[in-house]
Image 1 (tube, rainbow over the protein chains, first blue to last red):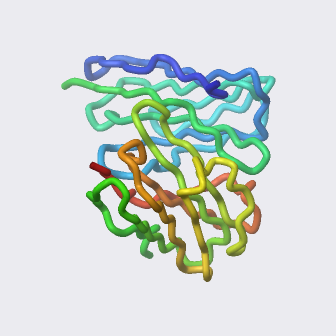
Image 2: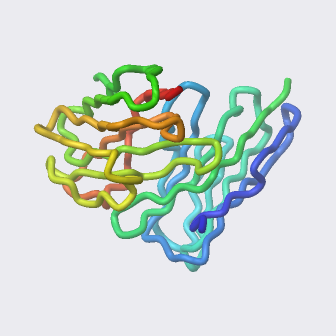
Length: 109
Length: 116
């Protein structure tokens, strides 16, 4: 059973479009992180959200933690080819990170 | 500063052979994690250490897998004997806080293991 469900699994869009990736669970997490992974490399931390309802912005990326701390979303505005990669959400539960399956994003020029 | 260092980057071995993966965490980090990533199962936590002590090894698939952390700057993940289903990318990550509740994990580049 996957504790964290990410959707969509695959997303192919044109440069300039907006997109949202969702991360959902029935479990409560003390915090939630978003990572980005490029081929042949390890995941790189983008952001950590801790408080229910928290919104964080990182340039064109907006991250939101659900009020009940069970879900999160990542919104990218005006996507660029450099945003291409695997986006992973990870919930902190009992000191361990539980990762979602990831969203493979492809942004075409 | 150097990030998490893993070696080898690629390993191809035959079924039944012993495989040892190595990791050097970021200096000063107190927690170390071993993960396995496959297309089917995604990124799975195998084991993590805090101050060189194994805290949770519930993710280790079976007795063929073992991990050690003899000091703060080195850890190994050993598979003996290896099987084709162990083929995956194995990541090591380290975290700067005393407890694994740290919110920041820094991943190495991974070791791509192929068992034929």
